[in-house]
Length: 326
Image 1 (spheres, rainbow, N blue to C red):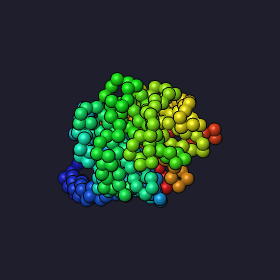
Image 2 (tube, helix red, strand yellow; image 1 turned 120 degrees about the horizontal axis):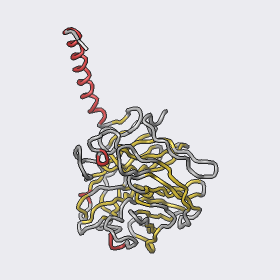
Image 3 (tube, rainbow, N blue to C red; image 1 turned 90 degrees about the vertical axis):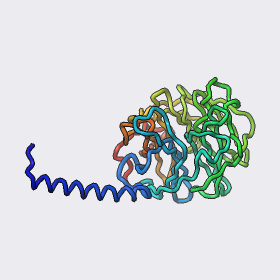
């Protein structure tokens, strides 16, 4: 199509103005993510979301995907935290924890979860142990925003402690719940483990057990409770979908209920967080929709509504680009 010189100049002036406005907005996005639709976090690439409701806010803890475009594996050295009072506008905060906080670890800031107990915040994280194999550590802080520090000076879970499968990466993806005063830690890849936590939240109480009844379990367990039902959602197969099982007892038996969430766009992993906030239920996950070059290793966190049926089962989550509405 022919464009005359005057039209061409007008077009370029508009383009320049747009770029100036865009560059200015980038600074604002580093502080607040208020863009409409999914993904909800756009200032950095983020994956493995774990949300915590505390007082009148939601704190969203994520791993920071730092891989270059067209990378073939993860580059993750720190975790990030965002907060929101409405699930729409998310405020970015300084990174409260990195793998350097654990002197016994050598990298890989993989999936994690934070929980509050007795005024302190405990962050369970998966990392690579300096002696080899994945391990789970725990950090502690007086604030949900940190800074967090290593609570033990050593790993809480090491590869030698779990033997259901003979791999070095089965001790990942911790999820934690406090039920009637007793804390439980679930985690795993290829096998799902769980154990009681002592009152200190930094040591195990009793044996490590294997969870049965999780059909096609791969990784990414998330434990939550609602109206007398325990829900254990998790990633299945690879590329991953999210499925879930239910039980009336946290020790099982667990009954498989089916697929909860389909393949996440442009990402071979799928990792979920399920919360209730101000009377509404939410499904928080990641996909690779923002960056075709990085895909699975440059992920972005998304949020959609979650709904229960009258019998307590969960309706299949519909992933949307529109995201939440006020």
